[in-house]
Length: 65
Image 1 (cartoon, rainbow, N blue to C red):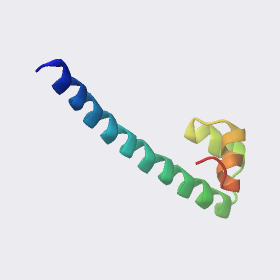
Image 2 (image 1 turned 90 degrees about the horizontal axis):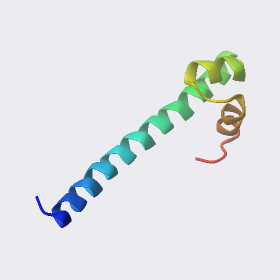
Image 3 (image 1 turned 180 degrees about the horizontal axis):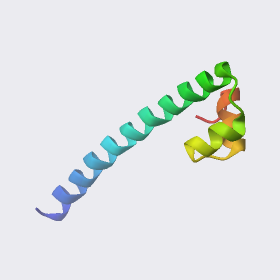
């Protein structure tokens, strides 16, 4: 594989990973909204998701996708 082919391959693999991350982020947004409906606290959700309480608050408000 030459350099250009390697770069194209890396670009393709990166695009696939970005798509996976975007799908996981959407799932987390849905789960946070479900958690709000269930009465979970931001702290509980933050700990379970490995996020900060501030990030959970952003997600609840629909901020910074």
